[in-house]
Length: 505
Image (cartoon, rainbow, N blue to C red; front, side):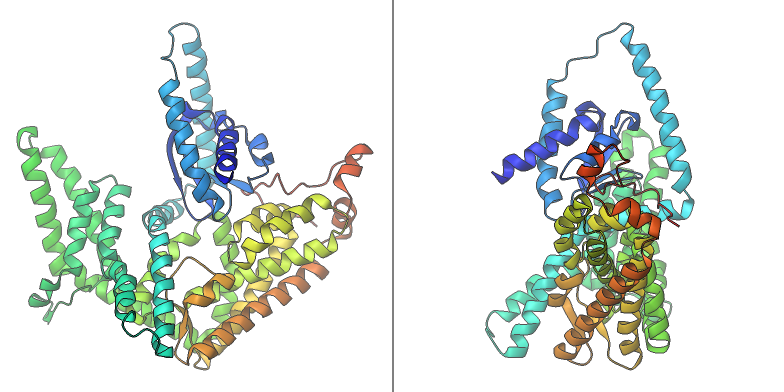
């Protein structure tokens, strides 16, 4: 039954994004179906947003359809199957006057893509998105291994199952020990190189034999430079490979290009990148600790308050390398629990909207369906379905996140660090991953109290300052009755506009 429902959702989406022939790539992250489209002019965006299972869309480098956690992982395989079936069944294009129409549509689509990309295609944002594309596929393994590590730590503290805990430790640590290889593979793929060559060069960083090599007057250590070194090594390998493809004769390309790529980039990695990336990684850890130790409340205020806009723009994934570096160094990232407070502010905001708009059944229905995901730390459904289209509540949600972040940051400043052993989840889902320097009970209590502060401040700020009188007059009505009476229909959360924040006076 569930499979048929997911297939129906996929079947409803496919024609609205131009059909199988318009799909060039299909992928997904935790909440979004990410599509590569040949012609975005063929997308019926209004109809797409109106689908019951679609919580919003983001027009970015890929066309992103927000379906929510769990749902997207089940809809994506069904969607891929329909695309494959559609392409297999599509007849060859017939020559004739239709070719001219297709060319005209393609030209219009190119113009629209150029106009949309011009708004957000700054070099910095494009760079961050490429970094995100490298790490997003790693999130499921990071979550799974992190939770297993948390369970193992609990069993060790309770002195339960001593024969099993070493096995759990191996399962939890295996991926993190070799994460540099996966980062190298994905980096080469993202930058247009051969993925396996990127992985091969990055593998040098975690090879135990580097402990016998001396660089910059000191012995190297396996893993030195971590994911940052792997990223740099794979980028270098990609550029060397491209240079080889350009100058090496085709007759010997299969022998010369891989050899030169691995040899040159490998030597640079051993005698340069590992040391430099190691120093940078150490600097990141030192800076993060100093920031929270000395300016904890203020740092938490800023980080918690600005995280929702990053999520809105899809740029929050670019923080994954920093989190991963901190986990490699310290065993946990102190930044994630602070940033997680943004989701608490969003939840408090949504509850306030639910209370204020007692007569708007449409918005209240959206909140009911999206709130459970919000409590588990997935904020996109509430962002795109509620606060962002309304305007002011998005700002007050950020205020709640800032308050929660300041609370957690304050305790870090007085010596009670709260961290997460993995990345991905937040909200209530982060509890199994919590770790710190003052015991699990203290860590859980601080984090839980921070969530409560975020909920309360987000609720109060939205309830009292999230609506103007005119907004309440327009929105606090039954949408069905208003439509029947002929009056203008208020903003429907099923039709959000993620690329625009509605500024309400």
